[in-house]
Image 1 (cartoon, one colour):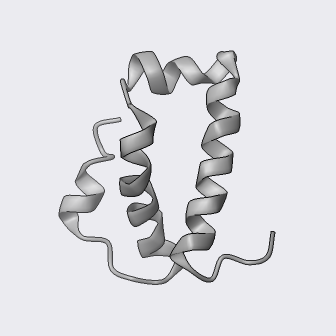
Image 2 (cartoon, rainbow, N blue to C red):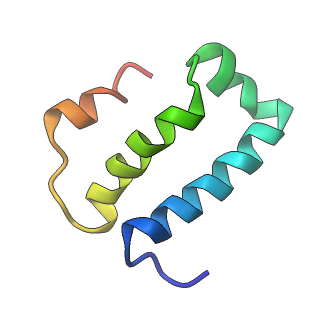
Length: 70
């Protein structure tokens, strides 16, 4: 994979990362049972969140506050 240049690049990277993460029972329980995240609908929010940093856009307080409690 080349450097992340677009939102689509980021989506691909994160999709592959989380597919591997959720396949690993040693860590997947944190996302499934502790944080209770349904990753399929949540993936777009994660991509939006990290897109702010990789593409140097400002992260709004509303966006960042979603991840603070975890």
